[in-house]
Amino acid sequence: MSVLDDLANKAGDDDTVCGVPARLVAAPATTEEAAALIAETRDLAVVIRGSGTTLHHGPPPRDLDLIIDTRRLAGVVEHAAGDLITVVRAGTPMAELHCLPGQQLALDAPPSATAGGTVAANTSGPRRLRYGTARDLLIGITVVRPDGRITRAGGKVVKNVAGYDLGKLYTGSQGTLGLITECVFRLHPVPPATSFVRAIAPATRAADVLAGQFAASALEINAAPGADPEIAVLLEGTEAGVRDRAAALAGLLDGEVTDEAPPWWNTPPWPDGGLGLKLTCVLSAVPALVTAAVDAGLTVRGSAGTGVLHAGGPVRPASADEAARLVGLLRAAATTAGGHAVVLTAPDSVRDRLDMWGPVPGLELMRRVKEQFDPDHRFAPGRFVGGI
Ligand SMILES: Cc1cc2nc3c(=O)[nH]c(=O)nc-3n(C[C@H](O)[C@H](O)[C@H](O)COP(=O)(O)OP(=O)(O)OC[C@H]3O[C@@H](n4cnc5c(N)ncnc54)[C@H](O)[C@@H]3O)c2cc1C
Image 1: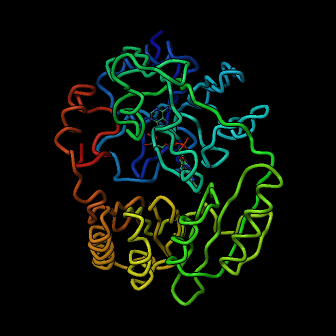
Image 2 (image 1 turned 180 degrees about the horizontal axis):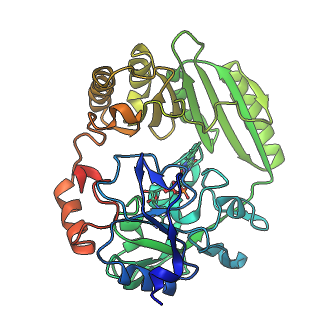
């Protein structure tokens, strides 16, 4: 019996990617099993699925024969507390990595999201300000390439110096270069105390927080048409240190100290099936970009400390023309602000009409990398920048 016959099932109604149905779904349980499956299915177009939290992001796949699901590739292989590292299989839910004994993988991805999907998506949340992104916290990786070969890069120590750092290449590759089966992450201690400072204040006040000696772990803003703009700051550290910093910051912003994050913290500002964009800019231009998004009728929220914002609903563009107009407007504003605007998600009815990535520096280099790794273009065909 072939590996495909052994592992694959007929796809169900929910086995779709951006509305494109798959024919088959297979869930390998080990790196070796995944490698045998991928080597045997060289004529099939593949999309990899973790828990599916952002599978609807980006353009639809051009073809889709097989979904490779990582849910059986799960479990913590090793937690070396003394070295502050963990080795995990790609399908491990982030919930397990948010609360290792005394330590954490400091990424705010949803609890159901998988470790491999979080690396492949390289999205970031509020605590990027202090801890960085998956790209910063990944120190080793095992990948099955589209030709079925197993490759390993990096290792289990924070300082890896030999060879190309292929982990960085796979981070954010959205399943277009291979199947990540195992990751090694750098961990951080769980802080003894945390507190939030919340204030009604415009994005311009974020600069005061950054300029002060508050050592914020996250600095988030939320602004929507017709509503008061808000700032929320996460402070972490010792009990006394957090208490003192929180009191001083609350005084500066005329805000309040709370144990809880505001309800909008780390949630996308678009309704299911709506239009959602990721905006980036230089820090000094955050207020101008926020104003542009709100003036366009969108809600905007995200990190004023790193210049990574999300904009979206409540507007659900009624037509492709309206969606294209909004995207054009936000793209121009982001460019002026020294950054980019990428459409993460859009109503199925308008997706085909949108340039979801916009102009991408380094596109030619990315094409060449894709050609090297996946010359038959069978991993997530058409999903990556430039329709690669
Ligand atoms: C409300 C919300 C808040 C979020 N906040 C954060 C945050 O704070 N920090 C953060 O880092 N992220 C954040 N994210 C994004 C999050 O990282 C991704 O949604 C999630 O981690 C993807 O994991 P998944 O298992 O759901 O992957 P999926 O959604 O299933 O897949 C995502 C992409 O990765 C590819 N992929 C999945 N698994 C693999 C694999 N093993 N090998 C290769 N490619 C693969 C898929 O093909 C797809 O392109 C947030 C998302 C949401 C919805």
